[in-house]
Image 1 (cartoon, rainbow, N blue to C red):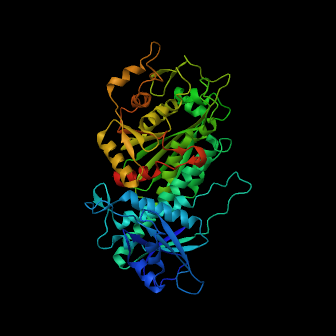
Image 2: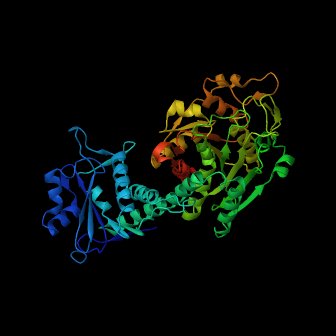
Image 3: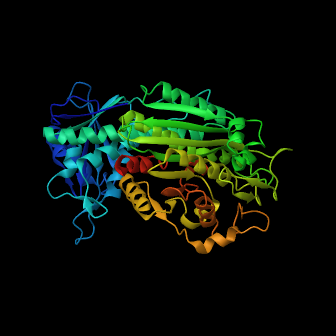
Length: 509
């Protein structure tokens, strides 16, 4: 998919699809120009009520092949300010509009499109995000993300996959060179984000008999080979992890015939003196619950239990695409959690890499076991920050639903940066408590701690467990159990929180 920006105007720019806008009860400049050029055919949509004044509503105007420079027109409504006291639209209205455009283009036969995005900055129009006017760069970034996401199709295991979208090129048109530069910067960033998001979605959507720990290790190697020497990768096998004393990690991996892997990717885009930020992804490629077996209903969705790892791969993919000037270490804790004769049992006590002992009261609380050893491994990089991403607890879904990612941190500055990154990316997180009051729920009579803290505050006690392995650096935990995938008719991975992570990494230094 090619994104570009250029200086032009709607009546001379040749394209298979011109995308123009209406707002409140009026056509914006480029739409008005086409309306005059076509004898009022766009304004007729407004007068007739065929185009409702709601964000994302749209109408097609298809013209003869050689009749105009634009073969078809997509007129899209930005919405209406119903409250007379309001002077601006919320950014969510614009994002809804972009999603509608992206869906339309994904189903259109057009191979190229020109969007007159500069019109939304016309006099009298204002869109605000977090109380501030949006910029051209932000708008074009979000537009590219919306297009990229809409064009994704899962085809890997389908013998008769649906046809791929025809769209190959999108041009954002502006009237001034300086505006073209801003749009171009945003498009470049958004296109990279979309690449990362779609890789994360693909990995989450792959069946667990394909997307195994070995598959992820091979993918890391391929990314490194394709990265023009900015990325290196290696994978630790179970024997190597045993030498490091990763008893918690291995207590999960040993139940499966698929060998567990600790996958290490080092992205070196910054200076050699700059310490890295570390991303840690939970990569349980399938989670049966182990001996504490899950109910059978919807167990197929436990292939999504590696979406934390998928988001880390997505972030690495986006960093490479952007040629970002930052140092990042990605650690993926990849394993299957299976019931077997040699699997861990409730009541087992294991020793973590940190030397702390853990009583396993529930083998379905396995993500924290692979993560705790990986978080200890992260110490060797002397990181500026460590962020782990995990589909960790159903309790987080109960607390926050499917809209916000749960955020925990031992450093408020880090938490604030992640929260802001999520707001800017429309990939929101919500900070949860990490209070000492909850720590006592992890007390064990037979080990330094238990791996669960009882039914109350399950997401909080899971984060408290992880916090015991993060004393030596600034750390945050993102519980994405409610945001990593959709169920039902739209079942599939979402690619969250790749955008949040990328915004954080690009602004963290």
